[in-house]
Length: 401
Image 1 (cartoon, rainbow, N blue to C red):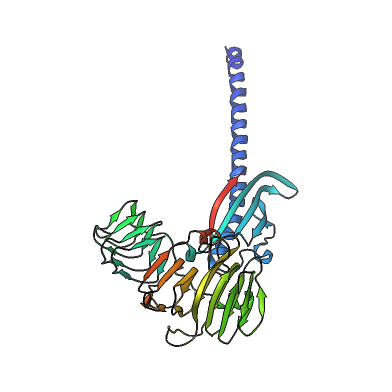
Image 2: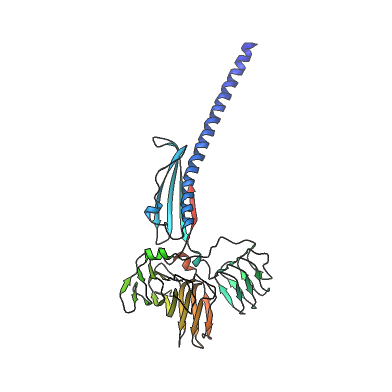
């Protein structure tokens, strides 16, 4: 009987031993793979931590992106990268290894494509506070963002071509139509008609702040006195009464430190005009003002849409003014005023028309231009972003293998 039991139990014991051994090996292999993947992922996480802390610096330069071989209790990681400042992308390849450099046991590779984009090209209209739409029979093209309540008192108002984001309450009648999605953080969305989806939260949007230290370190041309800049169709810009400068492939930043700038012309290349000021002001006094004194549009057939060879931004601390008498006025690009909510002006002659193709970040006070005012969002700014805009990192694609 003992012999019989031995003959039966021996194969069963051997089977369970092999099964347990295989299970242990499988568990160890799974643990190694998981640990190696976590090591690779921690390297990618460290980059996004860096990008979230500074919307201007360290996105493309080797010194900021380089990482030494990082050791962990169970392994180590290495990172390689390919930055592309023109297209505002960064390719990352993080290798996580379970084991030691002399005896790597398991390796996992995480590849990621990062796109840097600014909130200043995502919406046709941005306002840093509450906003009221009082005009009737108007259409707002592109996304619409208010960092406060949005009140629509006009009739037959339509928002088309992008989401409406309201960091507060939205009020309006049923004749107000949102031809897209609505995001609001308050307790009421009014009676407006929403043809897309309605969400009682808002995506992460932070009102941009201009970093003048960045512009002071990365300018193509800098002035501390008021100047007029003429943009040329030949890939250059001219300082009136001064020299002509070439626009680099990665874009030109024209920086006025504690002064005012006037600009006009045909944009050939990626250009940002920046007017800084050491104190808060407005359109009536102080510095940090940009005036567009004549037509400003892009070179080539698509004169009103940004392209791989042309895009523009005017970034002012205190005021952006559009001013032209005796004729119509056409401007293209992103127009951003950092301070206030009423520091964007338009002045001209009665009966004339005004067109803006791009982004404006405040309501515009108008004098003249009774022939019509037309504000149209330029979606191409998302792909062909002007230089020097504060931006955030977006994970476009990733692959773990």
